[in-house]
Length: 286
Image (cartoon, rainbow, N blue to C red):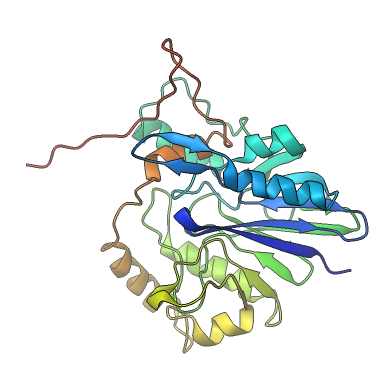
């Protein structure tokens, strides 16, 4: 039995959210859900998440899992909002504890707990999660971040930021805990799934203004990915990746996103004035 896959595109962050369900039992998983967030005003809204909720209800799906491929740096996860309305277990790779430790120091969060307990379940490579008559296999794919994982459901792999569409290459590795050599090895794990496996990406930035794309295959990535084609070896890949990463700007939502996402999509608690806040570190350049 093949899963049913519904894609939702969040234009402001170029993010794909997937609802994957077993047609026989109507059991479903939601992968990489997104809040709407306006940085200048600090407003968080739920219109994109409500589209997912409406679809789930229209299809009479039973959400068992809300899965993060990693702690994103470019959007705020709405996992808790979806859990409140649909149920489900919120899960992420066990490497989140390393990401939490890093950003606890970067953002000076002295009371923040770094054991991953904000999530309902932490996952390691080899885990198998039930999805009705189907199963979700967890593949550890670090490199972009410590906690990056791929979710394999039949001949489909939901790969987060590890790979983009072939004309956009591979994930950056300059965030704390990122490692280009690890990323190369993780890509090898994905390629080992088989040429015919469909790869569902988390972001598409539509280079050159082309139409949106979010699905490719292992075979197409091997042949056409701009960072991997022509059998690029590990040494060359690491060199190219690190050289490119040195030129990339900090994502504009990095600090708000990380603060919410290392907390499993829980928004910060309001302070004494009933207003919630996020922190942004300042550096004086002279």
